[in-house]
Length: 253
Image 1 (cartoon, rainbow, N blue to C red):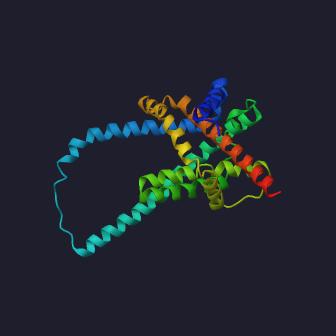
Image 2: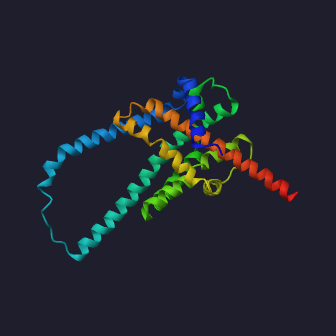
Image 3: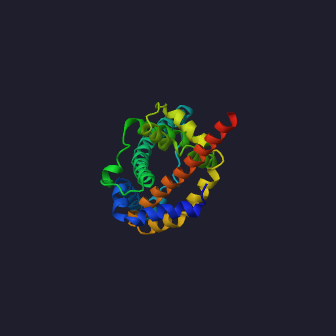
């Protein structure tokens, strides 16, 4: 596999080669990222303004009987499950658009030709199957994160290539597998490369901090760049997998 620097350089070259096309490919994810950053900043400001007004009421105590406590616990659990499911729905929606834009960058790299209609090119993988994969992936990742934070991160990397594998199946007219099978295929593909993917993400954290500090404005550039990096990583990983498959076949023959 290429080095992290080479993977990032390939993505950087793609985005800077034609920033207009890269921006349009990632337009929906850019809007979602900007909205998320602006909302976070607004919530933080609101919370800072309400701390003093709520601090005085924290000390009040209320006596509960056993039945009331059980009712409260059940209600809290049900509420958490509902929030959990709704959060997964939103995460899956965001990831579906992000992955579709990533596919646009992947196609751009494969064909080595700027897309004629980049905005449309960023929406080519918007369908029910992709959303289902993204939703189940979000559920699995959050469940692992509930156990421990680090296993949640590891599993998110394990499942990260599932939708791109699905895209290759569609492109090559192969049989379409179930969402869980794509997650399993991604985990197998990422075996031995999760550490590399983590280091790649870690190397981009400076850009993420700058994006947050600008209230999401820098997402105009960083979002297309990050998606191009994802495409470059998958293209490298797929090449390694295909080469390994050829070697295994040759050994058997």
